[in-house]
Image (cartoon, rainbow, N blue to C red; front, side, top):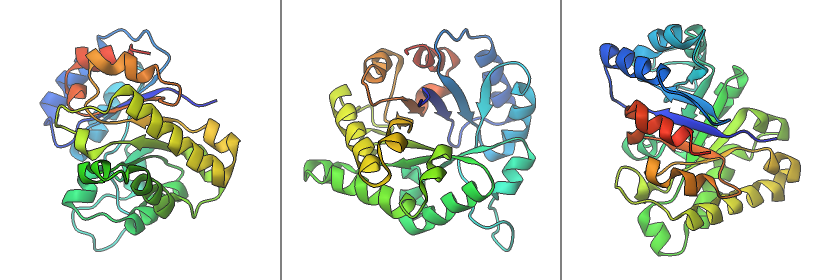
Length: 250
């Protein structure tokens, strides 16, 4: 049975003191839903966040990115083993900002996914169309290609450690949001794409998150759709009350 998940991607925000303050605020909130809760601080603060949260809160600390290599001459990069050494076992890969600003391709992301799985890490794999794709009616073709190019070399068992996150690029940080119906239509298409290759069991057990300006005001309606299993939250994850209002929207 697939899980409901709400993951907060903090992006390049919050120094150590700000991280500790936000975590303290998060721990003070009450969770009334059955969703898994995750936060992704910056790499420099993963260890402190993990140490602060590991025993009491039910919040998992996850990473925003990782390199495909185990080690080597990759200045500034972080490997799966390094993340695991500080208690992190889930990583976000393929976020639209990584694709846009750092030229991450489907082929590169396939290598990153392979490295995460080889190290027994769960992957939240992101994908989604840009506004031009949506206006041209190509959104399904773009999404299908991104998923297949990066993931469909895997065996069915690998998908037990993968969570999918659909993020329409035109709705990230813009204040624009895909309507609940648009989100549901795409999530249903994604699940069908999985089922066509891997069968109904893999598709039915896959958690598919929506990422794109989810806010307390719209979370409940978005999460009510049958194929939407949670959210990858950006800006609203930086305020504890807003984030937990989204968590409790289930």
